[in-house]
Amino acid sequence: MMYTPEQLRRREASKWTKVQIILAPIQFLVFIISFALVIRYLVTGEGHDIATFSIWLKIALIWALTITGMLWEYDMFDHYFMAKEFFWEDVGNLIAIITHNLYFVARWMGADEQTVMWVMVFAYITYLFNAGQFVYRGVKSYRQRQALKEQSLTQ
Image (cartoon, rainbow, N blue to C red):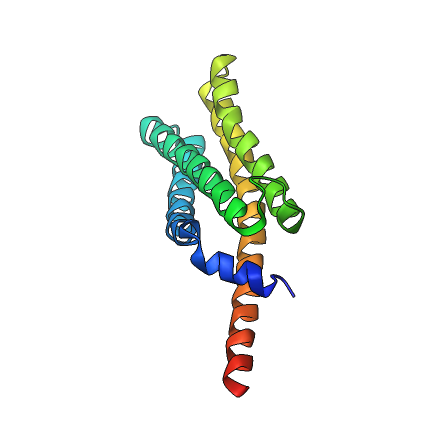
């Protein structure tokens, strides 16, 4: 059992569930576009400004999802971060957000444009792993909710 019945009730009642459902696919779309733009820049040397803009947008979205995710986690588990029920998702998110923010560290340290873009390739790979575990958890959660609905219909 992934969630207790009380946690499922809290999940459905949380406004942050809806926010996460809206923001997550937007972030994934921005990720795909940004990743393509970063790779294009690394291969051709063209499109630096649009790639940079897409990176800023992706970083803004990962922060938005992290903050609203913390509010969701509080609604669910009474912890803003690192609730035992959500520990590995939080670890994955922490790694992804740290690697995304290495962009600013690389800029501050005066790294050349190629290096900055490779930092983002690394960050985007960590995001893919993190997104994968959230998709896996979402599928499990959906199946649990469906099973509970079917069970309640047969009773």
